[in-house]
Image (cartoon, rainbow, N blue to C red; front, side, top):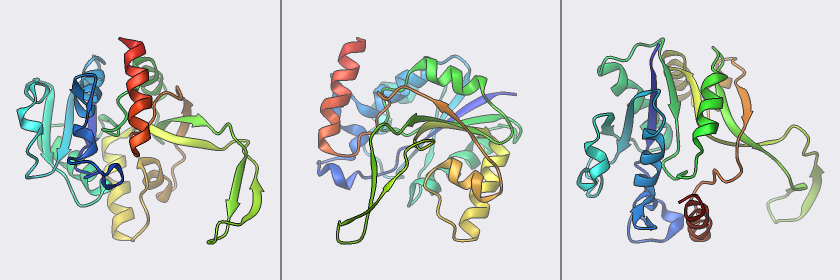
Length: 228
């Protein structure tokens, strides 16, 4: 069974307050998207990597990485989950089998380690598996006004990261079921949970951060610089 990747990359990154989607912001001379795809291309098990971009995206097709023989692209959707589903459907149209494996990875996580990808792949099972980081800090719950109402026990709490792995057909059906029943899909594991599956959590490096706010750029710049 082959292994594929889907990278949703159609977001506009409003919270970054930049002049372009966050995946095209520059870090050490390359866009975040280029860093992420280059890292994924270094993992030899990926048969193809499907990128879901906006239909009128003015950046992606001008990048050298878009010409790599293992890179495919499809139109993204309104929300992240729609882009993921479009990517899965595009892989099937390109010849992927529903029994093949697929990893979904956030385009804005350029610091994913190849070792974490390998460990996730080694843990594959019919329920799926995801990379995560244990919660280290004391957790608080507040009311709508910001007043603390309780301290939440942090044992067995995790930050859900990506990649997230599942059989292609299983994930596709789980997402379709969730959307048809108006169930929230915050990540691939949540869709799998909606159909009764229990994905396994694999501890990954905390450096696998997602670029969401302007301050995150400095952090990934430091991580990527230290690796070079």
